[in-house]
Length: 275
Image (tube, rainbow, N blue to C red; front, side):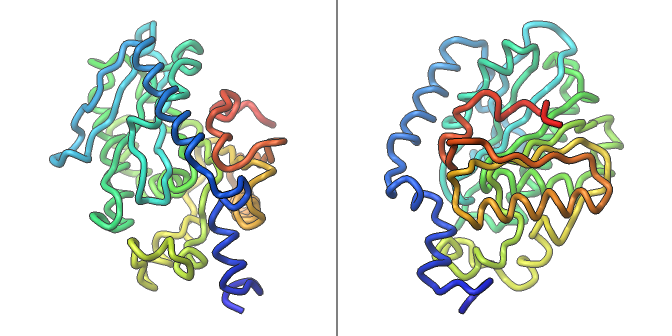
């Protein structure tokens, strides 16, 4: 038994969320791409804004319709090795319609980057946005940060490691929405997902959100689909409970009839209005 009593096959199935939908991701990846392209066609967008020095360090920004609006920043998933900001703008129309600006962040993927570099890049993207809040037309003191799957992991680690830097430049993340995330990396290291990551024991500790909780401050929503794997549900529930015990304002919810891949196609996923 490798982890929590699972056999190797069982553990790999638990950390392959496509196992809950017959293994066919293609329709969902196609929907991400098509809906993101539709959002770009419908809305004003500044795409491929460079927040760093490499081609991967870019973000797309969708301005709000009114000045000094709140900003919602999204970090995409893909198990740290797939997808991009181009596939991750499907939520932009509802957020802009709701009065927010929206940014979707790209970052360097494995095996070209280690996990700590990805965290650093996502942090840098937020800092870059905050220093340009006036010219981009949003309020840096009213930011929501969300992430899906691997992106939820990165968002959680950004919050665990960036509070002082954010405060120094007036960036205030008021809400964090973590969707179907990975918060304990140990089981990941025991599956083929780790092949391009090659996580070390130090990384397993230092980059697992459940072992590196943020300081209290923002309101957290930890959400996951009820049709996700048992391990993804458990990790979400455990992380929400750890946040609660650490003094955070946090809610946890299971979204009925929803799995790992369609959860980000639902507008309500990106609203932190749960009790």
